[in-house]
Image (cartoon, rainbow, N blue to C red; front, side):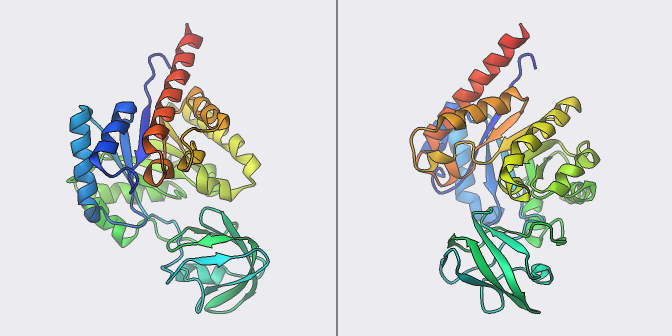
Length: 335
C-alpha cells in the first residue's frame, strides 16, 4: 500500500449541482462524482454536467464521472402523494395500493417481509391475491415515489439492464462518463451483459463498478471479480439482506478477498449520514471512514450527504481529511 492514493466521490444532486458548490468540493479533495440514474436519464442532466465541467476547470482538476444504473434493482412506482405508514397499520401492495413491478406480485405470499426505502419501512404480507397483497406495517415511515423495494429470501429475478439503462449507456462516452455502476450484481452473467452493452455503444474503455447489494452477489464474488474493474461494498441494500450486526463482518471479508486478489474496491453508504442535517459528523462516522481506508479501500463515496444534505462542502471536507489521516497511518505502519 506504499504511496497509496484514494478516490473520493460525491453524489450529484440538488444540494450541490451549482458550479460554485462543486468547485468547493473539488478543492476539499473530491476526485470524482456519481450521478444516480434511478430517477432521471443522462440526457436530462445536461445543465448539471455543464456545471460540473465548469467547476472542475475552475478548480483545475481532472475528475472521474460515474453513472449509477437502474439495473435489476426493484422500486415502487409513482405515488400521487407521499404515504404515511404507521406501525400496526395496514398497507396494500399492487392493484389499488402501492404500485409495484409486476415481477414482484407472485412473490407476495403470506408471511413475506417487504422492505421499502432501503429498509427504513418494513411491512409483512398477511393475505395475497393474484394482483395485490394485504400487509401489516411492522416498521413505519413516510413512503415516497420510486423508493426501493426488497423481498428478503424471495426468488425474484429482474433483467440486468432496463431500457433506460441501454439508452444511458449509449450516451455515456459523449458525456465524459468514466465508470458505470451496476446495482445488485448477482453473478458473472450480469457483468458480461453490461460489458457487451458498453462494447456495442463504443464505450469499452468505461470501467465497470460491480455493486454488492445482496447475498447472492457476495456469495458469487469470486465468479465475477475478475470481469469487474472495481467492487463496490454498497452497504445500504446489503444491510437489508442480513441482520444489520452481520454487515461489518461481510464488509471485512469482502475487503480481505479484494486485497488478496489485488482488486480495487469501494466502500459506500451512510459514511457521514448525520451530515444530512449536521455541520459536524459523529465520532463513529469518521472512525468508519478511517477504518475503510485502513482496510484497503481504493474509493469512498458520499451519497445523500452531498446530493440532498445541508452541508455538502463540509461533508466532503470531513471525508477527504479523514481519508488523508488514514493514508498517513498506513504509510507510517509500513515504515
